[in-house]
Image (tube, rainbow, N blue to C red; front, side, top):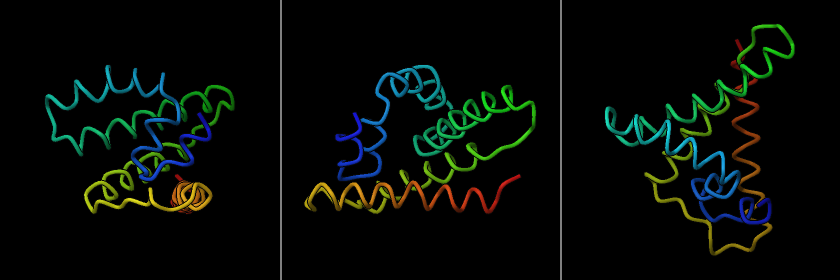
Length: 119
């Protein structure tokens, strides 16, 4: 799972391999119903936000403290997925290590920005 996801040549492909079981359920129960109402890109973004919020809720239940870090982080990563697909950004011709570096750079950049914007 880790090797395939980190070595993905597009950020959207990274997410297909990162957690396939979770992705399946998010796709079936969140993305597809949203896609009936909203455009595909907005449905995808809302799915990322929902996923981040679920992660935040789990952390809030454990810490008993309201904080939203993962919701904006997933929002930013969702924007990167949409933007990457829209601009047709493809780095699949690079060696695995370069692709992994690019994917980690996108994820960590989104995390740093989300942390700076933290509620």
